[in-house]
Amino acid sequence: MRTQVGIIGAGPAGLMLSLLLHRAGFSSVIIETRSRAYVEARVRAGVIEHWAAGLLDELGVGARMRKEGLVHEGIEIGINGERRRIDFKSLVNKDIVVYGQHEVVKDLIQARLSQGGGIEFDVSGTQVDRLDSDQPIIRFKKNGESHEIACDFIAGCDGFHGVCRPTIPAGVLTEFERVYPFGWLGILSESPPPSHELIYSYHDRGFGLYSMRAPNITRAYLQCDPEEDAKKWSDEEVWAELKRRLGPDGEKILKTGRVFEKGVTAMRSFVVEPMQFGRLFLAGDAAHIVPPTGAKGMNLAIADVLFFARAIEAFYKSKSTALLDGYTKKCLSRIWKAQRFSYFMTTMLHLNPKDGNFDRRRQLAELDYVTSSKAASTALAENYVGLPVD
Ligand code: FAD
Ligand code: DHB
Image 1 (cartoon, helix red, strand yellow):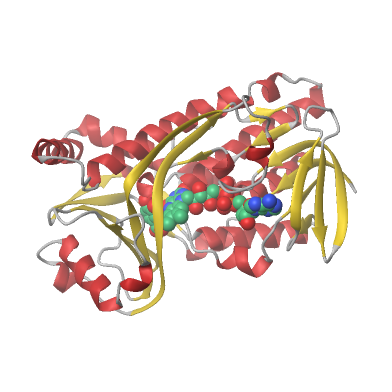
Image 2 (cartoon, rainbow, N blue to C red):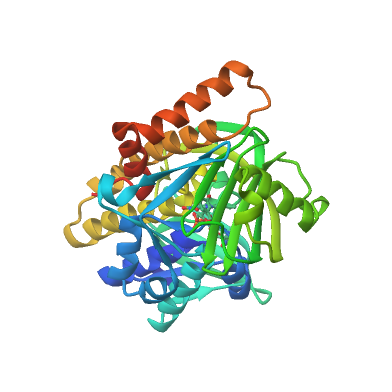
């Protein structure tokens, strides 16, 4: 098999890249370890930045998001029960769309397959080779048979636990990492959310986030120990804690319902530099992880592949390698700003067991400041709706 860009991973990064390349007239093949049903059911992110929603429209894959997604013009920040609103629309004249990542993935897969594009699901034994030549190779097995794809470029869109990053020879990459002493217990339930917008709630018992997937489906998270076993939390305990962390009116405004998903996610910040080696280019979670408090992971993955697709187009259309050579620099400038914002949101809102009473007072001052100063709330809004991708 031969293709221009071989893509490892059918997450948001790999799928968006295949559509961007197709629009520009280039061939690609995606290989994915999991089944189509698995990737289409994997519950993850929920917030799509303003420009990313526009890009889905531009690529002709935004129709269901526009019909079923929820447009939000602000968020609420709870401070021990007192809720204050950050109004994106009046501060930066932009909004975001709340629409599940797995729904985006479904839309992208359907679009790619209807273009006749290749996605090989259920592969095993993925290997990437000859990365420093101009014909890198992907090897994998499917149904017991070995396959090889000769490529001009390989896009490593295989997430944090993929094979591409570890294949890069020792000494090339520098890792930057911070692991947080807390995680999130996330649930999905058949019940209406407590507000029509997201509530990021600071509370003396720990952080709580109240999101949604539809007017009658709540997505909520509780700060917990990163090693916590989700099965140890009964539904009753989850609801009682979610109500407490919402504040005094939690009992009244949080409606309970059947919980149909429960899981724990540990939290880390991680970046590798550079994001390329020879003809292998890393994108999305394969190159960086943000703690989810800033709602940035999926959006960063989409921004990376947008920059990569532009670089590929410049390479084939004008034989220029300038954008390919500058890929790492271009991506990192945006990634580190998203890291900064995610770190800011995370440390402002969570209870850190290592912190003392000084830090709690500092957090309260920060929360008061970002919700009362126009300059500070504009900065939050500008980052939340998404920095430019020009
Ligand atoms: P992935 O989605 O991880 O996709 C990688 C793909 O590669 C997977 O399908 C995997 O199966 C495949 N793969 C791995 N290894 C191989 C191999 N060897 N061969 C072939 N295929 C392979 N982000 C936001 O923007 N907003 C949010 O609100 C948000 N909330 C989140 C909440 C939670 C609880 C979590 C866990 C994450 C959240 N994120 C959020 C982050 C977001 O989900 C990720 O950043 C996003 O999935 C990254 O996309 P990706 O395509 O880079 O990687
Ligand atoms: C959701 C997840 C996030 O990490 C976030 O910051 C906001 C919303 C969600 O899953 O809805």
